Image 1: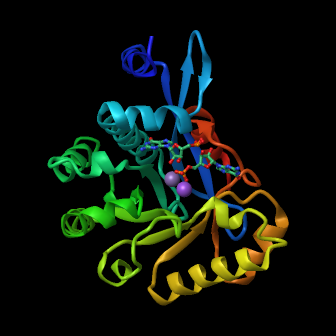
Image 2: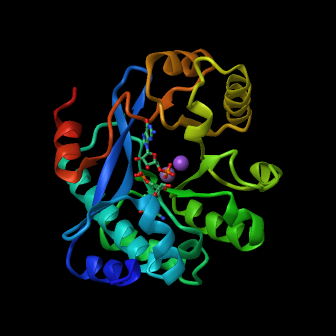
Image 3: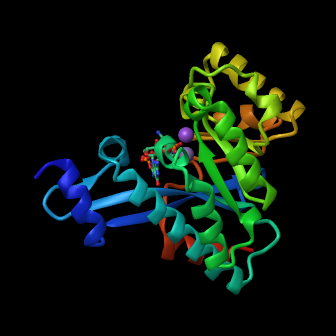
Length: 255
Ligand code: G
Ligand code: G
Ligand code: MN
Ligand code: NA
């Protein structure tokens, strides 16, 4: 079977799982999470999204997959709202592929899910990449504005790795930048990485955007990021992605 055939079966046969990686604040408190797909394939074992997300993009299956992740996320948020989320909780972030975002029905689909699960829209953050803004800036701006109008939040994922101009930053109603993992790598020793990261943090601050560092693996990286004013983090130092059950348990047992 091709990867694409296997992917179609995976969705039908419940092999796809949504995991949640913690986002933490200055004090190490869990203040949110990012939804990340995990595929447990019976014959081949565990398959990384780095392998199957591109295949899903090529086959168009990313649309079903993306819709599925969004629905799961809204359902989880509904459960958490019922259990009483504390004020510290910011957002559950969902990766949106360019193909999914560019669908004519994208805005309506998101609104329908938010309504179906009665999600407080401010708890949902959509992660988009700069590539969306390169090819279809005007349409993207309209879609983001429509969803921002009901309170949904938007982060630019992998910030700094795309080929877009930065002029969009002053016009786009996004709410956060995610510093790409590649800039955080070797941050403790590489002066050039430090220059890039401190510039991104300063820019986010001036534009009144949240900024979150990805791929934080050690205390030296964390200290540098904190010293420059970053106060949201994600990475193996704090935890890898957990099953919904495990994450929910941690969320409601932490003080
Ligand atoms: O979890 P991590 O190794 O393993 O994810 C690898 C890549 O797959 C990342 O670039 C991430 O953005 C992407 N990815 C993970 N989950 C999703 C998802 O639900 N939708 C999309 N479009 N990409 C995802
Ligand atoms: O591209 P995106 O940022 O959406 O995906 C996040 C990816 O980064 C996932 O593959 C996730 O498993 C991975 N990841 C999360 N934290 C760390 C980390 O601290 N180190 C490394 N190397 N990868 C991480
Ligand atoms: Mn992401
Ligand atoms: Na990223």
